[in-house]
Image (cartoon, rainbow, N blue to C red; front, top):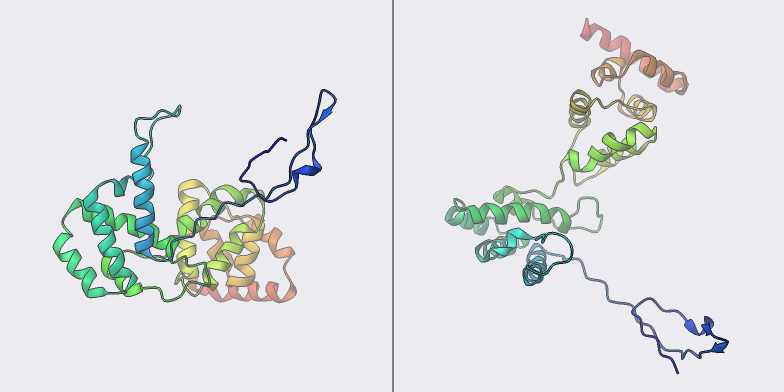
Length: 265
């Protein structure tokens, strides 16, 4: 009797009997087991402990050739002092203990190991307290602020790929992301912040708003033509979008242009 072992998901392989040289091999039924999923760290301290273990494994594999150069993914935690400081700071932040963070900062703040620990925690706090996860509660803003880190991602990490790679496709990914940012209670970005971001990308990378983005800015953010010009949008592009607007949005767009004409003049 042939027994096949696997860790894959449950299935009944007895329905698939292999036939070789005219002989049928009977495959015995047996249970298959799913591997347990690794739980996501729920605290910053758990995150440090988890990646410390990952780092230990990586260190054990140094020198073993897999056909590519050895890469340590968690190099920050390879230093024992960095790891210790990261753990101490993580506990203080998890408990939102501002005075403890300040004490550690005062005692070790001048050390490069402290800066490495801080940078590591700045990256990982964005994963532990994901601003887009509605289940996340009790975010320790005060202690993070005391250390100088934040779980708030910058606009580049949220919006950068969309304006850089997907805007040319003519889709509405950029406008949807902008709406998500502005409606997120855990973020305090304004349309002015986003405007500056889009303008910077236009100046540096020749980013151009597609019709979907232009329509969103006019219909949902009360943009007039002057604000659109500021983003490098051409008159012909505005006119094409204008023709497809509802009567209400057309009237509002005209009114905004007339009202702001005096300011420009």
